[in-house]
Image 1 (spheres, rainbow, N blue to C red):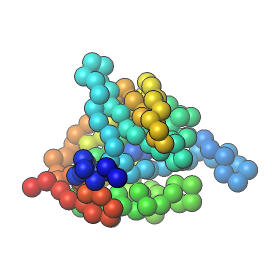
Image 2 (tube, helix red, strand yellow):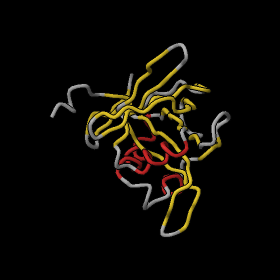
Image 3 (cartoon, one colour):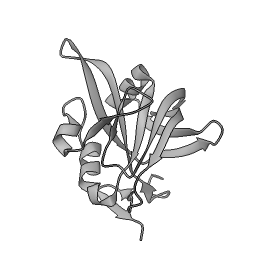
Length: 164
């Protein structure tokens, strides 16, 4: 596989919220997905792209809500990032299980993560099929960087590193 070649890549947590069907009930669900396939794609308008597997709950939630928030986490939270990447939101409440704090975004109906170093509130502008993934392009409606800590980079598998 080629997957190891472009690493390390900054690991992010993408948050989303949507009404989903859960055992015959409609619930308003918040979820977190760990990703390392992402990038800025435009300055004007400001846009950011994420790649999400079509089989993931977060993909369905983003498709329904048409919004998502990209959260850049510090290295010290690597265990929470790994937990969110190893567990399905269909079976777990990742906010509760990790202790990460959900805060309502300002421009979109979606949570962001209070502990994040920075975040991007995005409105979906396009979705492009790419094999087993969808590239979801979002217009950035709000960007905020509150801290300048060391961010987390994924090396592959369960391994992470950070910058100096």
